[in-house]
Length: 131
Ligand SMILES: CC(C)(COP(=O)(O)OP(=O)(O)OC[C@H]1O[C@@H](n2cnc3c(N)ncnc32)[C@H](O)[C@@H]1OP(=O)(O)O)[C@@H](O)C(=O)NCCC(=O)NCCS
Image (cartoon, rainbow, N blue to C red):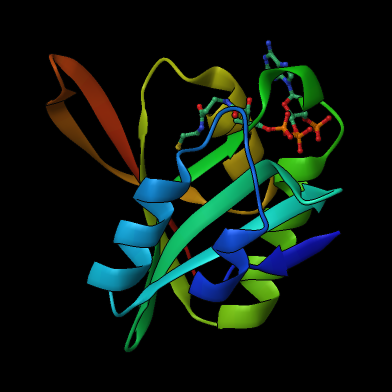
C-alpha cells in the first residue's frame, strides 16, 4: 500500500533502511516536504521524499529496500507523485546511476544540465519533467 507518511504515523511504522528520525526531522524542518511510502505490515519498503514548492516540485530522494527492487515500487511512487503534484518536477541524480536515470527517463524526465563534481567529485545530472 502506498500512503503519505505523517508525523503521527511514525509511532507505528518501522524500516530496516530508512531512519525514521531523519523522516521526523525532515517533516519538522521542511514545510514543503512530503514522504510517500510503500508500506507492508507497518514496514516501509520504499519511499519518495519530495518538496512541493509553490510552482514546482523537487525530488529529494527515492529509494527502495534492496531486497524489494525491480518490483516496480519506485515506478508506482513516481506515478503517484506526478499525478498528485501536477507541476514541473526537477531532481539531481548521480551520472553513473543508470537504473535511476532509466527510471526517470521512463517517466519523461529530460536532462537539462550537468553539475560538475556535485557528489564528492562525481557529476550530477539535473533532470526536469514538464507537466
Ligand atoms: C532506483 C531505485 C529507487 C529503483 O527502485 P525499483 O523499485 O527497483 O524501480 P522499478 O522496479 O520501478 O524500476 C526499475 C527499472 O530499472 C530497470 N533496471 C533494473 N536493473 C537495471 C540495470 N542494471 N540497468 C538499467 N536498468 C535497470 C528495470 O528494468 C526497471 O525498468 P522498467 O520499468 O523499464 O522495466 C532503486 O534501485 C534504489 O533504491 N536504488 C538506490 C537509491 C537510488 O539510487 N535512488 C535514486 C537516487 S536519485
